Length: 411
Image 1 (cartoon, one colour):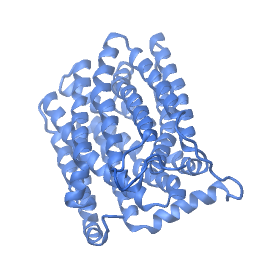
Image 2: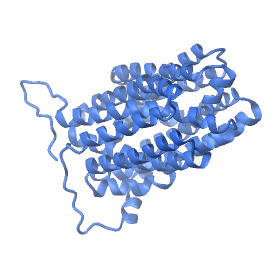
Image 3: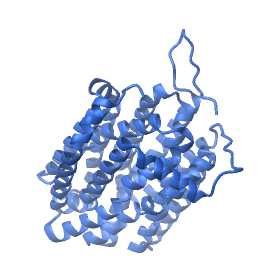
Image 4: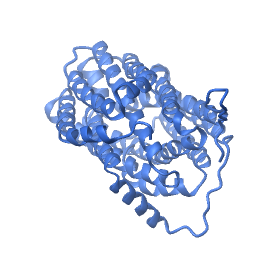
């Protein structure tokens, strides 16, 4: 596929039409996903108040990152990525519609919600991998960080600023409504993705899928910097789920927030993420990619400890804003580095290994978070999450400092 931006000596390089269709698809779907994100735990609480069962529902959505990531990466490198994305979103629309119907009929259960979460998460594994892999095909390398920032900002606006209050308000009115909104957003997003230019991927003479999966594993295993970032991401996402798996119980029981207040509180993370998306390019240029990543991880560890100490929902919203800010900075840095370093034909597979390592521990983190909350209280998971993050970052710091000195910022 030829890039959709044209570069001349007399005019600046711009993001092209294909990117903006991808951006609008992300924008529309993110609002629906944000509504779903707020409504799903509220729906789960109507079924059970047990922290461990709530954690199981949360964990189910992340299990696909363990079981589906590696084959998904090979599939993304073998097929047209835009086509994969819209087909997976059509599948997600069917699943969310089923959740809406079950909710309206009063037939919701813990196994049903966990199954829906697993199916949605399986499709999301493919979509996320394909979206990150298709971006270098539609924008030039020098604009990748800007393109990633634009995607993160609009995704955050939808998922954390617009969607959650919308979802909580709709849920308070009619429980099935936010799931219907998410289903419609999937359909509209899939329609936009279906208009993206296609690429022809050679299929004849390719080795078996397991051979290609192994090639992606070996490539990442040999690259010290990306391998280290993948391990750090794995620990960080484990801690994220450890702290957040029982957030809905912490907010509604310990801090006494209503359903509507819970959705409004989630906006805090969105505000911080938007700010992080707007300034992360400046931060990375000013400090360097790796130093920005180190500072973001250190700050996030402190924020997690702060979440466990807050006295009310407003203070928790502030902590969520800080959390969203630093997570966005670290995420854009790592995604942009992968897109610039990894060869294009390998990008889907390497992304899949990176994501499997980075997200594979999230289900375990959710289960551990539920166990900790059950036995030590709903504030305790945040202290555990912050402490683990500090210990791992300190262990990795010498290597990251070395890489800072050797990494060329203009790769």
